[in-house]
Length: 135
Image (cartoon, rainbow, N blue to C red; front, side):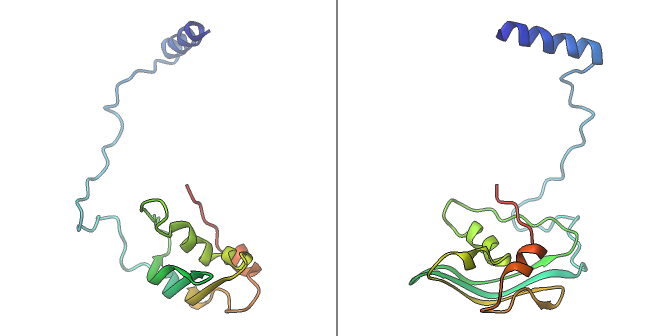
């Protein structure tokens, strides 16, 4: 079966003219640690402004004083090892952590200058306004 798949792929390449030549693929700009890439627009408005966010699972603190401006029309990636709080942070933005018993969030997250969701309020508006992708 594998031979049939390989033959089929080779036939498709011959028919479409596909090659393994990657010279037409544009090179990515290399950015060294500590450098600011040229594509960052520091003048862009802040879409989500996170200030002094702490998050607790019961007595266990998972997030410590997170402050992060998320700029409008730019990609923001959270990168780190397993268990460092990336998903917990994302879940605080759309108030999904509110659905977990015995959790507590401190600090604030502003969306377009207004509070994303008031503390103790209903999280549904936040969940409709903020989408996250956790890969």
